[in-house]
Length: 161
Image (cartoon, rainbow, N blue to C red; front, side, top):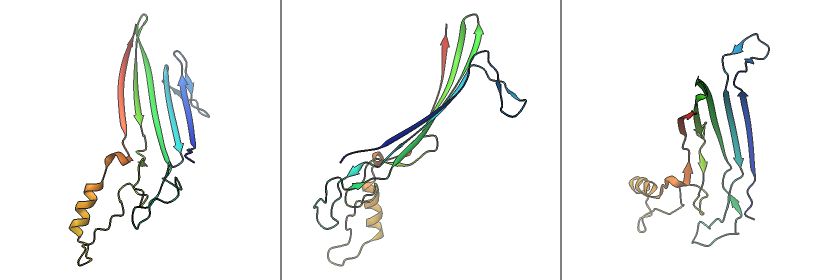
């Protein structure tokens, strides 16, 4: 079965315009109004794949193996400012993949790894494997689209009138 299970959690903290926020169990007031922060986290079970035998190219049972699960946290912070009259600006910051999680998206079917395909690199006559050959071949098979560990930060301003 090609079934994937997902779990998404989200929490939003908001202080509306003109409100004050008292820090719990203290007399301290946060000097924030028209402010919000949201953190969301998603988890997904590993995608199934069909493994191949290490000898030859024969496939094993269809979708009998799973890749590692993936997870990612995102953060969004917004702050509004009144300028004059009905004019205001809103600033925001979005951070995608906050903790820079490494998520495997594609694997080689022989090994189940994103960076090793299980190819026998030994010389046919001598059976020796040269380190240079291994290094060059590993550079050749690396595909950056197989793994995602990208973090992005977006800053923005909107003018409201």
